[in-house]
Image (cartoon, rainbow, N blue to C red; front, side, top):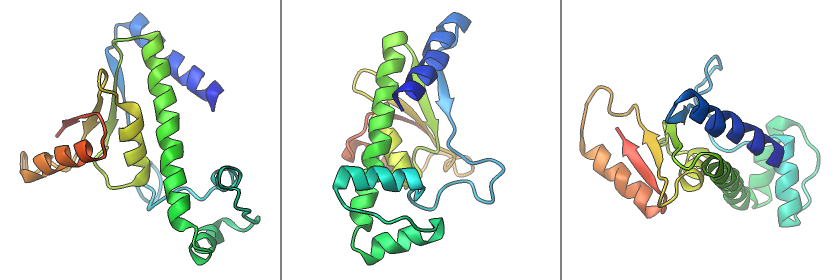
Amino acid sequence: LDEAIARMSTHLAEHAKELGLDGCIIDPEMYGADHTTFAGVCYCAECLREFSAASGQPVPEMPAGSRGTWLRDHGLQKRFEEHFEARITGFCQRLEQACHQRNPDFLLGVLLLDYPLLAHRGMALGLGTETHPVLGFSETTYSPGYTGYVDEQQKAFAAMPAHVLFVP
């Protein structure tokens, strides 16, 4: 992952400075898929191996469709979800630090950051800091405009606590 972070931060922050760009917006929507977001956490073999190593809990090899059920049946789903969120948060913290080392004024933003998913929560917690809050863009306000949702979402980010500048 460290190699990927170095490569990503170089492409994002250094090249943005060269091109006169203020920052970038990450769009986690899965275009071209049969749905636009993950329904929950990632159960890929790598995520399970990482969880097993970090928790000391052996996880047997199994087909992808059985992994979530196995974790639930063994009382490990909550621990796995916490680990998944922490993994996303840690990755995003390292990416944020690397980007701001290369370009201190670089802005990071995420579309759909207000979706109630653990991966999005990890991005909110990891990509924003007190001095460099992440810009959290929403499409929930496209049609209705400014509603009480905006205030509720700002409170939700603050309660995490995440450093997010919410952009409805």
